[in-house]
Amino acid sequence: MRATGSLYGLAYGDALGAPTEFLDLAQIVQRYGTDGPRELVGNPALITDDTQMTLAVAEALLLADELTPQQLEPLLREAFVRWWESPENNRAPGMTCLRACELLATGMRWQTATGRSSKGCGANMRVAPVGLLPGVDDPVRAAVAQFQAALTHGHPTGLAASELTAFAVHWLRDGMSPTELPAALRDRCRSQREIYHEEWLGDLWQRPGTNDPREFIARGWDECRAVLDRLDAALLDPDRSADPCLATGAGWIAEEALATGLYCFLLFPGDPVSALARGAASSGDSDSIACLAGAFAGAAYGHDAWPAEWADRIEHSAELARYGTAWD
Image (cartoon, rainbow, N blue to C red; front, side):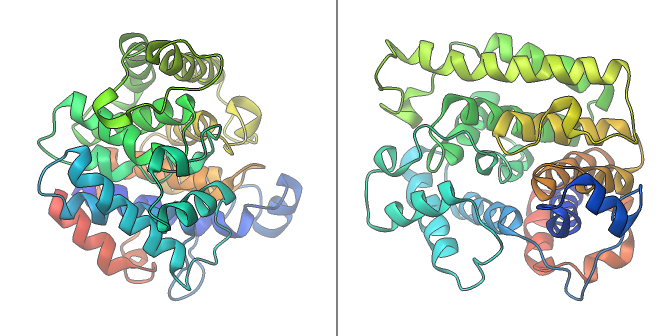
């Protein structure tokens, strides 16, 4: 049950990281100790916009009869606008997502509505369902991962980081060893560097100072490869007790959210709760870092790796189970 494990893991990390998101590390340690938060709080334990938007992406994917931009764009638009309009959209959502969804609600062309210069982690905090889809070939998975990001975050690094996040989930779910993951992601940066999914992205690349689509997307892959360099360096001398943001970034932007979520996951092989706690006990975007660490850990180790009682307490448990079951 690795798809289920990944979706629940994402929500668990989100719930553990939400109370620490705007605290510095000293405040987190004072409140939770050096090991960070390790127990869900509340019944239900509340999630944030990270899980809410993940469920929106999952809903659109499950409703699509086929994975084409013509099918998926209105489904994603509707799901994102419904999230934007929801009274439960009060969990410190990102301003880029809010503004883009407000414009999408007017019917504006998505390439105009998106935050064209934004590579915030809202691009990839929600992409795990794309990695969990079964029976999808790599070019389509890549295009869908970038497309769901592009509706709100139009920066090339947000697109590339979303693709890498989706493929990390996909590869782990299919049995890749976690130790092989950084090299596989680096290889993908090289192989995809000048591939622009024009059928899906259209003229998103057009902006002052950019000469062609390959130049546009290459910038994103280069920035992702640079943060993977930082991840590799951190893994040479890993420190489980240090703030992970010092090694790979604070996670407010997409490539750093990917790298720091991966770092937390890889610091604790076979111990997913500690990976979540480390992500939550960080000085940056703690809920997004921990939710990505949870998506990776659940994809690698399955649903049974999480404390059994958490499934009954996490908010939106029925929806998480429904999507997980569909893709398991």
